[in-house]
Image 1: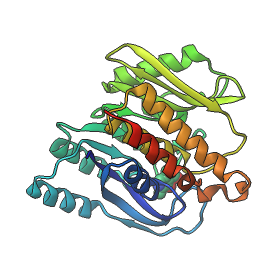
Image 2: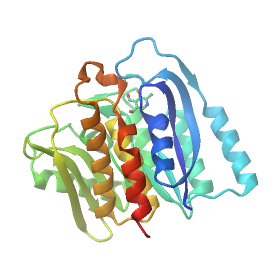
Image 3: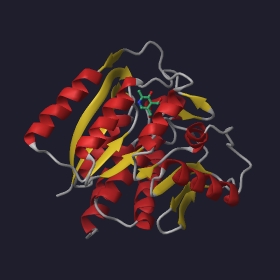
Image 4: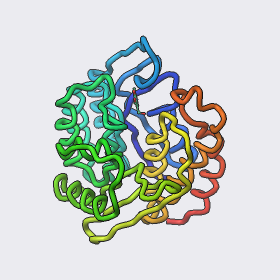
Length: 282
Ligand code: PXL
């Protein structure tokens, strides 16, 4: 059985980060350890007055104990971090546990051209340091631009722009694979585009561009993609598994867009996802 560790916050309500990653990765048949970066009553994008408890000190203690126990991982996935100081904590976690593990960094910090409320303008430069240690990074278009210190281009781009952006990401950060999410070339389709720098090859997978916006879809995509790669799926197959799972979650939530910040019904697709992964033989 493969073993992963997911490092991100627990937003107690609002279907994102660990409340999505843990059930998703478990359903995929992967033993899933967690390192919570913070506990919040809800996520920060859509609720007012959320509580926040920073767990930076706990993270170091958890890692020290695991190191004593000789625990190892096939992959390490990171998501939303609670503070700037946690960049150093996660870098040291990579040092200790990352040598033989796939390092998968979702640089969660921004969307729709704006940083999430808890982050200051210098956070992207700090998140870039994590990307430098990653094998795979999965920014959305906003995060990709912020990581590179470029202006955000959120519409009106073409395939040549996305391909060049991906090449800038892999060469700047030295990661083998960069994947940008939320790519729309024609209004009816939305998907993801990947570049494998070692193979010098692009991959993409698109589905229907559903006319709705929900919070947490990036986390649904990245946890299922991290799981698929941890299981040993090829990039093409992994992108399909993750995009299909995300679209199924969005479809299952359509009709309740008035509470878009409550996240998506990914639970509806978990049994199909489990079956797909069960059928997969590495
Ligand atoms: O879905 C990303 C995410 C995760 N965790 C917290 C967030 C967000 C996005 O806003 O606020 C706490």
